Length: 535
Image (cartoon, rainbow, N blue to C red):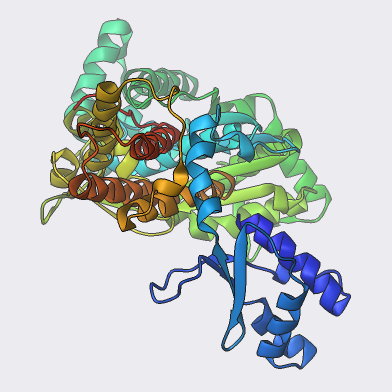
């Protein structure tokens, strides 16, 4: 409906002012204020006031004169220049029939121009099990990839494995019997029960692991680091993600960038084009400031391999999406500068920053530290509250907002737990439909739905497609979580105030709740959450 109204306004503007190129200025939004009777409004007149040096009320009245009468809505002008649209009740009520008859509620969101899109997410160092701090990026990344596939894009999901560098060396010394040496101290080593378990598992699989000594050579050490890395991924990270229903198309190893000479190639190109320089024995990228690519000791930095990795991705895909923790914010300019230096269009690189999630048990905050081995694993969270609650709660806020996750709420079986409340609405409607039987033999009369509770439900149903557009096309899953909460609340309120199972069944009311159930099921499945028929 928003798009229909927007297009009508654009046509009216062309007639009134004879101007094109105003499309981007035109916005139509649903009204939020309860005292305003209209369903939608536009502030285009206020936007044009300065451009045209005219009173916004005069502009609004001029636009309205050009709007053609329609059986869809009525319109009026309100000070200081708003154009209000009220959808006619007959049109509003048609949404029930549209939803019931629809074979695919998500069909309108298919794109006409599919792209090859790369989505990289989680990519935590393989130094231990994933903890609840990694969970938000995992759930968000998985759902973004799903939304893009729903749109019809060719999506490739990838976990980038940092199997090179200091953290892997620390893990090697944490798990092996090899004494620390050089610039590594015992205080830096990883601790926790999982380190003991991993050491035991590797020793069983590779008996020679027990014999490692301090005198181990560099190539031998590299071999064992690779074995340890693979063990951590297969026995911890991959299993935990699969338990959540997250499967990657590819696990991309940082070491491969050195083995296939990609790092060497991009360093050579940066040097040849004058985008790097030697400084005090180190090779530096000329970015916002000098950034090391190779240290003075000959060791490559993460930036060198990250530039090679992004060069590879941008060469192969139409759009590259990275889902990173918010603490990586300062890293973005370096990557983008490097990509521009290598000849790439950085508009093809979309980096989503995910804020931290804090875990609570009631008012008590649960502290976490991977290095000290004090953290709640993602597996523990799955075992305690289940996939449905995890998928929902991690998506309730915008990605750039801090998220407080209360375990007590997530396991509660009452209206304080939004997941339970939404699923209960679906199950409650299922029970009603089972008692009533098949609806196909009855003719639906939407105009009989007149009480305030029904109007509220119909209004919520009318905003479903706009919610999907924001969620799926706009890649904003939190919008759907909020919508499902409101729709379920509206249904439970309706159920409490209007008798549905009476001696003489009002089938128009049953059609309405059937449409509500269909939308709830679609929304839950969209978020990878079950829609139970019994609770």
